[in-house]
Amino acid sequence: MAHPLEQLRDDALREVDSALDEKALDVVRVGYLGRNGSISAWGEQMKTLDNEERPVIGKLLNEVRNAVTAAIEERTGKFRSQKESEALAGLDVSLPGTPHEYGALHPLHQMHERGIQIFRRMGFALADGPDIEDEWHCFDALNTPPEHPARNEQDTFYLSDGRLLRTHTSTVQIRAMESVPPPLRVIASGAAYRRDEVDATHSAQFHQIEGLYVDENVSVADLKGELEFFLRELFGSETEVQFRPHYFPFTEPSLEVYVRSKALKRGEQWIEVAGCGMVHPAVFEAVNKARGDKVYDPEKWSGYAFGLGMDRLAMILFDIPDIRLFAQNDLRFLKQFA
Ligand code: PHE
Image (cartoon, rainbow, N blue to C red; front, side):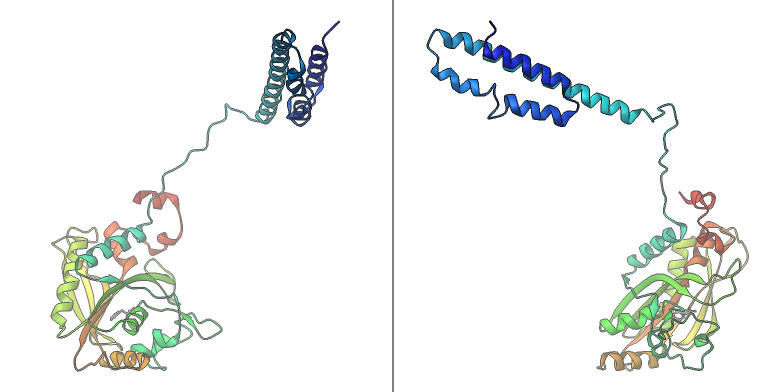
């Protein structure tokens, strides 16, 4: 007659064989081999056996336990590989894989980084301001009166609450001076917006690098030297730089900056790249009013400011014929800068 342990084993093996999934298999495992399982219970019973019987039944118990454990493992393996092949059934391994392409920085971003790198060497710190501005930072504080054409609906994107998309990055001049006393040397790079007719050289969104330096005895010579150095670092030492008189409400005198270089593809042609000038005393006064003090005393401090057209610089540097290419996201264009 079979020992009850052998009977237990046969029952267990049968149940393992008929379990339909891993969950059912686990129920079988717990029932026989779990802490309160019927095979495990024999471990306790061993203590009641006499010395002769104990090694024989002990051996049998081990064999039974091993046999049932092995059967469960085998069936678990079967369930798992079955699941795997079901998951793989719909997969055609002969199909080509999905290639992962390397990205690259956008040419405007590359321009931004090159610009900042050069100005950093000249001691400029990075400043920042929001694209959505109030009229005060964009115009009033920059000595630009309400009747100035820049404030016209036709030229500027207004929001319904009276705020606007900044028409230039000169807003950051004001924000920087509001937050720190002089002396001050900052640049800010970012987007500006105007209702321009879009063509090869005009876009409703363009980008500028703004600069502001305030200290004692700053002169036009400092401004010219600084910008000439920057443009020669960027475009090469043979670059010619020309300053032409101009008008901005927030600088006096005001100048426009042109470059030309035989080394550049555009060759002989003078290209306008920036507006600049000496900070107007009215701008310092406006900042003082906002700060509620007099630290930007125009009698004591002077300064220069400039706004470089970043898209224009990148177009010259990378020989890009059309400003619209920057925003079209055409990979054939972008890949050329990888
Ligand atoms: N904000 C001017 C523009 O957008 C450029 C400028 C900046 C001029 C700083 C003078 C000083 O045209």
